[in-house]
Image (cartoon, helix red, strand yellow):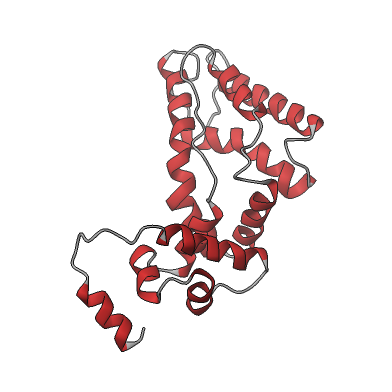
Length: 206
């Protein structure tokens, strides 16, 4: 950071509102760099966004966290309902079309970077996935509260199982849920997992 930037940062008092549009410009700049396959550095983000180095660091303490934020651009809350049939709610969500703001290309980019950079994977998990995952936690917990799912169910492991089959399609099979066969396969796998977690099924013996 240059002396001028340090001085500029020092002139700002705690609580002062952030400049309007800076967050969007910074994230847009990072996405542009990612889409071109360029290395993400502070200097390049400054050039791509037109936002100062000091302003970037006030928002994101590291480039890893900034990349994670950019990769999450366009992701919306799941919108899972806890009313009615919980399994059907989950299957209906799975079949819902993806929003135009988060494309399959963006998802594949995120998966590729996460697989090659553990720090990005962990930052993305802690900052974004874990937050959005609370909706699925609530759904599984509701199933337990209703007496539909096993009372001793490991919720975290159950969610990994339910969601894991979806990522398998992208990473291993190379298909998306816009493929009817892939969607049907995921829905069937989730039904199988749900039956195994349901009350009346044998619990796993440790």
